[in-house]
Amino acid sequence: MSGLKKALLPYGTTSSAPSIVLPDTALFLSERGSLTKNYFENVVELLNREYEAIKSLAVLNELVYRASYNFVPRVGQRYHLYKKADDTYLLSMIEDWTAYEFVVTVEYTADSVWKDVSSV
Image 1: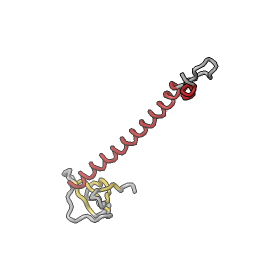
Image 2 (image 1 turned 180 degrees about the vertical axis):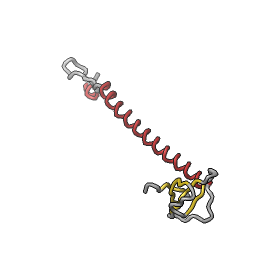
Image 3 (image 1 turned 90 degrees about the vertical axis):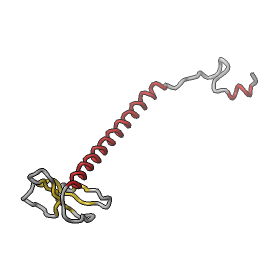
Image 4 (image 1 turned 120 degrees about the vertical axis):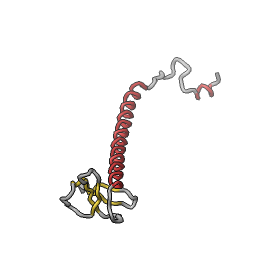
């Protein structure tokens, strides 16, 4: 082999060349693998929380859209959902109405989605 080609090799070709030390890939893989696993577990947990929040919002919207009301809701306004004795629902502008069982206070958004604002 010519001297030029030997200089380009990634390893020594004589006994006096420096020893080849392989990196500890097992250590790297175990450390990084554990970090990667934690990352993906956290992402999955976050996605599950978001999924549950969207699912709850969908249930709330179905409930409100099935309720009876005699007005056109306005974006940004708060309304109150009540449960009547016959297990039907009524959406009202009246707050603290004692004639029915209070369920939740909602706000109508520009996306035509009802948002729970009871705790706000």
